[in-house]
Length: 144
Image (cartoon, rainbow, N blue to C red):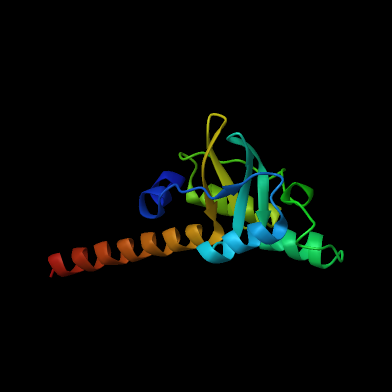
């Protein structure tokens, strides 16, 4: 079974984070520049939570708040389940499905080391299926 560590071997472990007093607008600019849908909120390397595009739309736009006046600490999600590099892709997909979320922070002990998205999990699943198909084709060709 593929694991979170397998995803990291393809995409790396880069964590983009901001401090809790960063404005939502500044966080959105960073997310846009890096083409990512979420950003971690940390304070002196301590994980506080995550801000996603969904948080922005539901906690800023729909509530009529200002992106320039609202701090990420006011809208972050802090109750996401945590996973480890040894957790399986299937386990992560089940967690995301059960909790209706798109991102999971990855920890080693209490240290944030990365994030996996639903896109990462789908990409890894497709890669695994392609590898299986290739192996089956090789097996069939070898037996002829």
